[in-house]
Amino acid sequence: MTNINDLFQSALDDGTLSNESLQALTVYDLGAQIQAGLGIHVDDVMCSEVVLVTVMPDDSGSIQYSGNAQAVRGGHNSVLDALTSSQQQDNILIHNRYLNGTVLYPYCPIAQAIRMDAKNYTPNQGTPLYDQTVVLLGTVLTKSQEFSDNGVPVRTVTLIITDGDDCHSMRHGAKDVAAIAKDMLRMENHIIAAMGIDDGSTDFRKVFQDMGIRDEWILTPANSDSEIRKAFQVFSQSAMRVSQSAANFNSLGGFGA
Image (cartoon, rainbow, N blue to C red; front, side):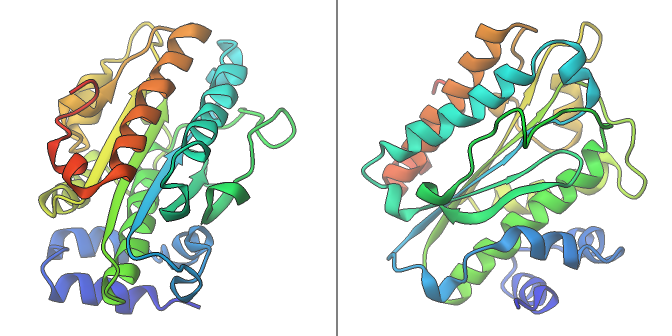
């Protein structure tokens, strides 16, 4: 079992994490939630470098109510298909945690990732956007620190998906998410992207910017099957480019750039 606090301390020691982020990650015991996503052990990964792809699909009731459940399932599965076709697929580990905390699969090779279907994805819950983004980014940080501490170069690309503003977080606010995001983005080996599916009223650019996500990594698809799938496709292309080389990573200026 990974000692998460040791990894956080290591991140603090090497300047990856600020005290503010560390506090957001440790003030409540998130260890068990983060542990649930870590998956494959570092020693079992035989790559000279690793790319972590992490997705957090919204499983709130409004996704179902708006008729978008199948678009989200199909979008996620299209990301798996794209990455499976990548020549670098052996270097990629992927993890899917739903917005309400259910781990569909922890970090694993693409070939072992579980496709989303009507049995394992029934969106009928709330929107604890800030709480779960803290857990998600904590998981990305922990896993990447694990590889770094073992001398393996790591790049990460993360996608947060929601069709509404936060309304069920109990512990964290946008400021906590922003502190962690800022630390990660400063390291220049992390991309944090977000998709806000139009609900007719939420200013998703503002919501995500308040969470520390850069404007060029925000997608705001219209509330339609084709637009949602198209947004997932845009994310897939960026994830593919991240997986191809570190040079590509440094030249990525956002979606479409």
